[in-house]
Length: 272
Length: 313
Image (cartoon, rainbow over all chains, first blue to last red; front, top):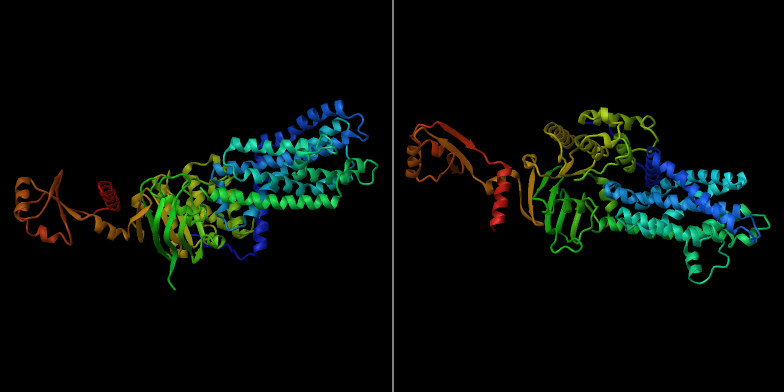
């Protein structure tokens, strides 16, 4: 029998932070062990940025009064972050199928820590995909100043958290892999088109405006563009809200998404 | 203050859209350090009960306390006190064996996460290596789970469930899929854990011989507890000891038994059920015996008898 004792006298904060780091590290470890995932997260920008973006640039860029390429590149960076983070969260359904969720849920930690760790772990692949988007953008002759890019990178954990929290509301209840993949599309595609990632939305109104206003990507995008266009003549044409408003909206939507999504996830695992 | 580490009162669970309760008003308690077994056929309610007790499934009604903590109001405290081996393996197949253990140890706050085994604290490394040696998986420790056999995976789950030294260890059919040698090794290890830490063990199993040495066995049938006592008492209640006799002149032997008013059956040999000691019967027999032995009923015999009676009822 084991004679070596491991102590458990740790503070609650240590345990929760350690949980976030541990779950996140698992996602990153799995990412590196799954070359297909890594290749996909780098290849997706070629399709999204290269094909869709390229086509839009050739057909829509005229008469906007600003550089559509840069506008779209920022949109694609944030959109890719949202898409890849959301796709990563769909692996919660895989964990359910292999009963690994039980292993996580029977541990004495906050369910929020588990979900935050999962989102931040998925965010790793999302941030890697930024490199793919930037390379494709560079090939198309679009670039961002390094300082601005670093600022977007600094904001990326918050944006990924917003993306994951929003996705959790939908995916929290799903236990079927096919349904989860469809749900991810349901969450990400409308955001791509309605929140201004590739199409300017300054004149959107009606139901589409309502949808636009409840999507976290709208505020993440606007925040990123506020960072990039700060001090430029295009700022007023492109940026819709004050950065503080964007930041508050992202924080609020993230909080709501996390609370509702985590509750639904934990509830659906326990209530059968 | 009582020393019950598990206390269950009128526990009921009805799954959504189910026409009957999977667990129906079950009550029982388990003392600190006790080895407790739940026996029952498939669908009897064993796994449902263990899932509720380990906070992974909600109950419909009733009251459950583990180590004095309510499973609904103090679920986190309950989780700190327990370890579990689920019926189905719950390992991440993409991680190595050690990475699975590290994940668990970190979630239980045993140590801070580090990105490699080598960078983990020495106490963790030593403990993992020691446990791996005990259950014989040291060579598989750094292999991906998908390359390990079912038996190896089970052993790994055992290490994982014990690394945080739980007060109560729940084992939901833990030896399913293990070969005889692995089963024996597992039980030796679990018994040594019980001796060393006074761990309370709650077991469900299909291998009834594994429950022979428990302190208390509960028979569950269609969600209700049918009997709950020590294995010895259960066997006494359900079965009697039998004398197995035979003689070259079997006709003379059976005639003698009939003459003495001793009931018997012939089932290959002459079977004579008795209570107390066999001496009273043997000493009165004059026929030369060629076979004389006492058949002590096993828990499995008692369990099958119980099932037969339930079916008949």
